[in-house]
Image (cartoon, rainbow, N blue to C red; front, side):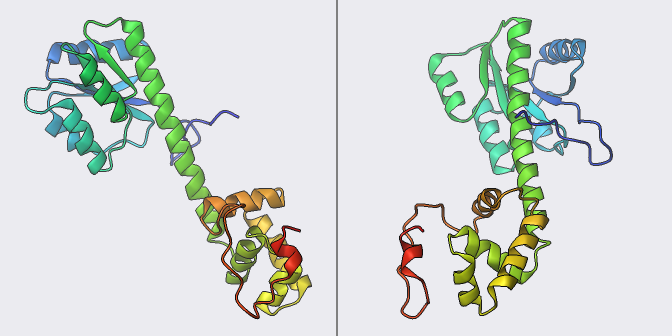
Length: 239
């Protein structure tokens, strides 16, 4: 299933991509900006790394087109500084002095592509499109995580406890004994948790619990039961 484009916080229209261009050659900046404009893509240009690093990153799906050899800073150093500042955008490196060692270092550092000047317009557009796709996917995953945490926040304390214990593999009867309430009440809490979490099946609820870190993955070695904890032997055998 394809990820939907991120929506604007003020409306329903998807946010248009924004490409940041960092190159100390004004002519190259203008040429790349014009090329992107010709295919309907927005861009912002910067002549120095300092100017770019000081900018507030837009909420749109974005990427950075970064020259490896800037006058003051090395592009790989700029990429590290971006990550340290939380500017975790996909990077497309461009350079007129590319070599294999440098390109390998760039790709290991997380670059989407490494283009050596002069490059074809289509190669550049393909690299930018791939970088934007990477950022869209990342933003979608983060948005899903935020939505999941927001739904979990609506659960009562009892519903959270039931969700955690059920996702950990305990039967309703075992959860009831552990919490000191009736099995019927456990079923009610479990149903409410599933409704509030928008879980269509119990398997969906387990997956959500794992994503939230509420319980260890199935198959992980469980802690040894404490004496008197009421754990039944069949449950320990996976029934």
